[in-house]
Length: 76
Image 1 (cartoon, one colour):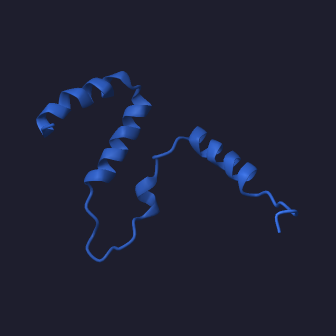
Image 2: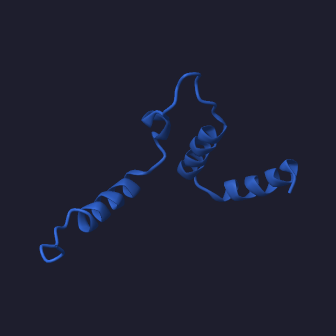
């Protein structure tokens, strides 16, 4: 597909999203097109600000607590 032919499809799907989801898409697109600064090897954690909703973060925390913070004494 050519670049020009993708734009109408992208806009069609974008129109289906609510305002908050559109903001998340915009944030993601900005991370794709941003160029790293010279001499900067690591991506700043601030580049990911707003990438996850509060609900997503809470779900990840629950999954970590349930799956990673368990000690199986019989495992060893």
